[in-house]
Length: 219
Image (cartoon, rainbow, N blue to C red):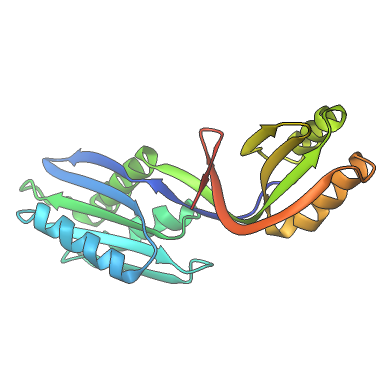
């Protein structure tokens, strides 16, 4: 089989969660984001929606390598809310994400350890409810070949863990495949070898894609 694809793990569909700890209610939301402006807008929306909550704590990770990291305890004791939320994000290797946990105070103090467990637990529930994807930089490749070579190329693509986006049938067959940039030349060479140079390989545009339920989505 082909090597594991490398890319950016991020959130495709928002995840939500809820946790109740000694009468305090924690609501959590995990978003995919691309900028601080988007983060600020989402935080403003959450604060308006849950205006009567005691705390709105959060953490986010941005940047190509996750180098931009921020968190807020929003009035909770230092290190008991924002950092545990951030630890959930970094532990899952997520980039381009914002995780918000809203707390409605139940009248019972949880203590430092209790707060860390509650915020971590609420954050994990949002992660469990989200659709997480691996976003890959790629180039589209059109493979034009005759029917006799189709099975061989399909087998090769499967071995290389590549997914065909679209298949067109006419006098020849055209397979449209997004190929990760770091493997593009290698894959073209393998297809050429497998078809003894008879396949026509057409370079397409650069894209970002991911697999959701085994289907290709472009981002």
